[in-house]
Image (cartoon, rainbow, N blue to C red; front, top):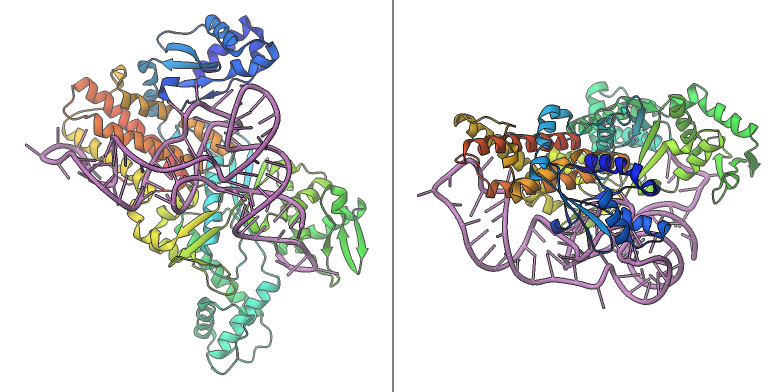
Length: 542
RNA sequence: GCGCCCGUAGCUCAAUUGGAUAGAGCAACGGCCUUCUAAGCCGUAGGUUAGUGGUUCGAGUCCACUCGGGCGUACCA
């Protein structure tokens, strides 16, 4: 429908050459009496032309050439909106497109041939993934899916560091727990990782090595084994959410292949560094940031900024057209430094999009649970998945805008899992499957011969919603807002459920019944496409 | 103190990116199954969009200030 309006406006450009001065924005009015589509172009042009918007609007309508079989009427309303009303038979044509394209309906080739990378989760292997990581994981994976749907070739990457102080602490923690298995009087520091999983790892080591590690001086063997076990655990958790990565990038490799030194040298050549109090500082103030920051500590070790910049340099060297970083709000302050550093090295920071999501507040027994991996008062993502299932977890994390804070009441999630909106969507899908099974028994087949019969209020509303899927998807991908898809699907499901209540298939006149079957199949395809994008399953039965 | 994010119905959140009368789901109340899945549908009730001022044809959305919450503000990552 939007395409057609755009087409007739292009033709209009030849007659009224001022049309090109304003963008043609088409929106769906909230109220049906304001038409199926609406544009504010007359209001936008009003200032430039120094004419009242309603006058411009009527001039546009007079000169607009359109097919009466497609558009029923056009009128001017309010301060100067131009409202379009479509012919029901034209609206129904969307079914043909959907049945034609099926699982590809909604895809576009807008970014065909472009490479994108989404970096997400990126938790260091110091413990199991928490519910907090869940939002990151689902957000990243869904954005990756969206980008694929608009044509990008997407790589999913997990960046981690297994060398820092945290990891040393992990090794110490595991070693101490291991020693405790032989001598319970060994003390366990409060500084150490408190989680049960540390004991599990220690027991695993005991099974593997018996008492051979008791006199081991170094913590390396403990650290290494802990890392392996934890990483396996993390990967399994992610797989339970149907999330897999193309690449795990170890920060250590940046040191080993000289990337860190290379970046450091470049900064020095550009005279962007200086020494102060035995540390090396980066002149971030010259790059537009608030203050200079240390990149190499007086101990000789780099701070996180240097490897982060070096890491992003490797991304640019790998030739991505778009790079996405998914961060929690606790990292919000760090990325401007990294982008400034990238820019100073001659790379275009516009290609990097940083998505900051707000934290998830977990409520348990009505109280806020503070998350800390070290203190171990976290709720693991695994526990959550086991409790409510993959579909609910994925849907829950994606249904809200990432910029809004989210409350997750655990008790409510368990108790009300039946009332979760994800079931509402899945139910619509299963219902359609069921109807289709029934119609087969009645020897009724879908037909696109008489789509014009789909002219009731309920059928038309459903059809119009089907029209908007590709556009909605495109907008969601372009703005990195996957929650739009969830909102779209909820509306679609609601319109289907209303249609179901009002319009019967079996028992209707045959031509109408067959057109309606085509309609519900089209609806099911769109539901399934949307759900698969969100990584939520579309059941045949419920 | 300073910086970033946020504040919308009792609760959890939308609002097509500045559009027309701010919408859903829970929770509450009332109705609809001898015909395709009642995990559904229909109705009632619920709002000074935290507050004040500004920008313009038009503001929940943009700007300023105030109040309230989250996250930062390291030679931690």
